[in-house]
Length: 419
Ligand SMILES: [Zn+2]
Image (cartoon, rainbow, N blue to C red):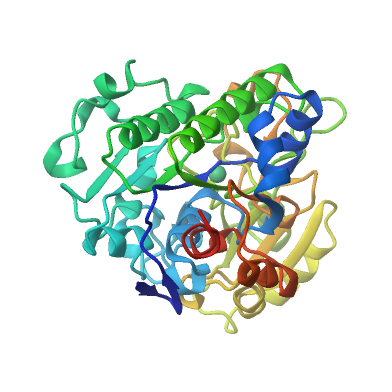
């Protein structure tokens, strides 16, 4: 057994594949099941286990991936966004540096214990954190489809991924960025090179297409076919998501966005507030860095000394489209966030609203007539929690005693099913 963050995990005796289907709102699976294009998922719903779970807040990619691989909330692992401002230096940085991660991962401990472990991600931004502590080599493989053409045995534990998968690395803005991850995982299982796999996809399709649109149905059908292949190879397969996805556009098709830094500085004076959008990542073409969770910093770095914070809080609460506005203390308590990395105020948008910083900072030209779909708030917290095999009586009892979290998935996949 390995032990991490208060949980014990049994080493797999048959290959176990845990999939984080990025942006897989339950509505996509409902639409696919209704259309009859998800036969594998339908079967697992009957013979395995299918429920809904809560993702961690903010409902962004990095915090949730790190929660899934550590089995713990952001207060434990420290990753509370894709992008953040350092409270002391005020530097604005990507939250992708493994030094920011404050926990070991299940993947690292398993590989160190001699279990052949593979972590494959669509976007390279997650690779270093997912690979932290992995015994790269015989028991550790970690790479991204984004950089599948430049893998080396010393850095990634494997080379020639394009040969392995049988096609060139996909475009960053494509459905194949995710399917390539799944196909690479399948090849590793076929070649008996991985006993524990973590396959983390991209939400490119979900940002661009609503459930029921042909592109979304085709993508989830392709996902379902890969799930069937993994199961046919004898894997225990588990699937959850980092967040859901909602339409964030007005009736006229324009994004429904509040530029909060502009609003606050107009009301409280130039430079009174800085708004950080933690959805920001290097590839923002499909959402313009607009999500439903932002952080507000007052002019003074220390809360309590800034008399403007309480007034700002009140002003924000009166804006249309706001779901919640929380102090640093409230946000950390409610969402289990790391206090030293939290802002003066946390603001979330409702189901149909995204929040930006200044209009000048967000480039929406690439939306190109598409309705904006995004995530980040509590309305994107419900995600699927799916297993290919039925639960043991003990784990079935857990599902009846409390709400499931997406970061329960490794516990359930390794300890909770009878192969
Ligand atoms: Zn995501």
